[in-house]
Image 1 (cartoon, rainbow, N blue to C red):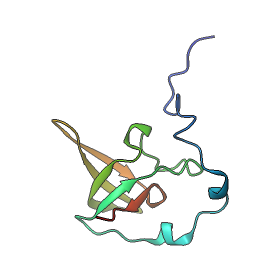
Image 2 (spheres, one colour):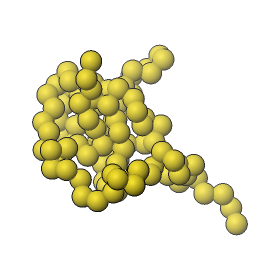
Image 3 (cartoon, helix red, strand yellow):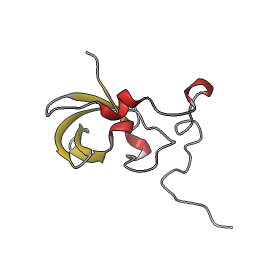
Length: 97
């Protein structure tokens, strides 16, 4: 059998929740509004597959550039480039300086 090359491969620890985090998502996480220029942290919620960014961006700090429907357009500075990502609110949290 060939090796799987899916988006969630090698993500057993990254894409799992702790025991006490299971269950319904708090509404405050879904209803939080972010404005342009806000700093957010990408924290992937594995229970919600829609609007999930790639696992390589887990834990990174991004800047909100725009809102696109329910989702947000995020920019993450890499070494020489700036990556643009579209993610839904369950996968992002406000960054506290």
